[in-house]
Amino acid sequence: MNFKKSWGLGALAATMALALPAFAQEREARIFDEDAPRGGLTRDLGVTVSGGVNAFTGDLGENTGAGGFLGVQANSRPLPLIGLEVGYEGSRNPFEDFEGALWRHNVGALAKVGPQLGQNGNLRPFVGAGFGLSVLNPSEEGEVLFNNDVVTEVPVAAGVDYKLGAITAGARATYRFLGGESLGLAQDGNAVNLGVQLGGSF
Image 1 (cartoon, rainbow, N blue to C red):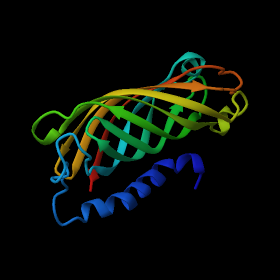
Image 2: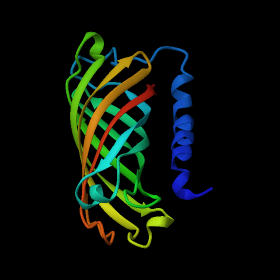
Image 3: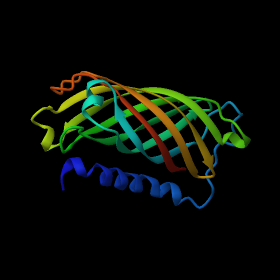
Image 4: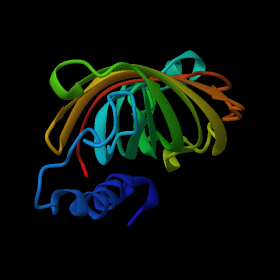
């Protein structure tokens, strides 16, 4: 199977492997450590699958159209106001003037800051920032004009998460500053995506 076309299956398989232990718990996951004070450490670990719409700005945006992304994240909330994520995200954006697409494979980390609102802190709006590395990989049709490249990413995000027992759902917008592009025709541009997440905690 072509590597560029298998990222979705790989992300889904990784998610299933990581999420099964969460849903195998016989009791409902607790958001807070009942023995800790309100401001103390939490027991909040989980795995989520994300997906949505991805687009580029700058030269990258002029040469590609809107596409989709799919990802998988492992996350925790070590303190009531602070959340952490690490994960993989892959996207595909079609070329505007010819067949094929620009693929992006990213691994990165995101720190989130925000309050826990509502009963038991179920509603969690946040802002976040992080760091990652991406491979930008044009399909065979685009290799005449575009080169493979490894770039840095600095994502900034805003969104909201909601927990219902062991289930987590959320929505967010992310702007990703890309650095070090050397793709030939497309020398600059950043990434923007809007997406939703669904997963479980344990």
